[in-house]
View 1: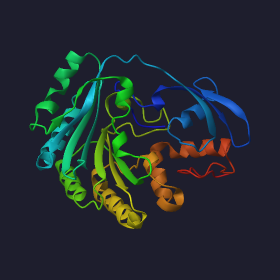
View 2: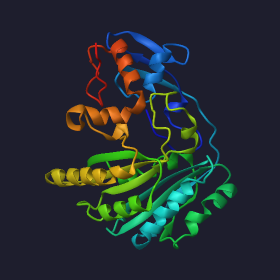
View 3: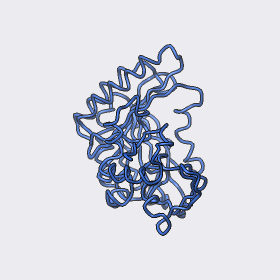
Amino acid sequence: MGLAGWPAGNGLACDNLLSVDLVTADGTTLTASATDNADLFWGLRGGGGNFGIVTSFEYRLHPVGPLLAGPVFYPFAKAKEALALYRDFVTSIPDEVNTVAALMNSPDGEPIAAIVVCYNGSVGAGEKVLRPLRTFGPPLVDEVGPIPYCKVQTLFDEAFVRGRRYYFKSNFTRNISDEAIANLIERFATAPSPLSLVYFQQLGNVANRVGASETAFSHRAALCEWGCDAVWLDPAEDAANIRWAREVAEAMRPFTMGSDYVNHIGLEAEEGTDRIKAAFGANYDRLVGLKNKYDPTNLFRHNQNIRPTV
């Protein structure tokens, strides 16, 4: 349970979890919350499926007013400037804004840059905050406007159609340097599939105000998650697309915190123990202690596995 969703302003999904009901490896049914099995509750907020099968979640809800949201598309010739604008924008915006910046191809196969925004607040205030993104370029297309909450949740659906083939890589970044932007633009141009994309997803603001040890998710110093999503259709092209994603990830690693987003890495047999440890970050040893307590036989191991030591 990790990154923030739409709309913005309330931190990570795991920061808004109040309790869970789950079944542990020995068949025990229990509730984990701040007052019941608090150690397990800590681990479930970032530790993945290593400790049991969750049967229900209880979340803290927040009021959602009118949302000003949608993508702004820019010519690929302006990609460097657009990503630099995005970097400056995400370091100075209020909590009410969440953003994603991407390099992708349009439906007609032309490379473009995009910034997707969601402002949770009054439309008038949102118009002022988002103006720098909507006036830069000028943009090819500006689709930002007032839309319902449920519609916001579908903004990325067309990029991830059921039945396509996918391979993801990502990492966390404290900043977005000019060198990282240049590297990403160069690598995106080599993608073997026109369906693939690379992106930055905003993480900061509220998420950064939680201590690194307050939940199992420890990457609280990150400004963004950087990601590379290889997307293709033909199984015969698996090797080429997977290789591209891995090469892009390694090329971007010097610009990152060195800690992959756990939901975007494979199983231990593929990724190796060190990369999984890095994905759980500074809280890994504490998570191992929970694994020893709640799943000492490693029943729940078909995941980004935290190995017990007992």
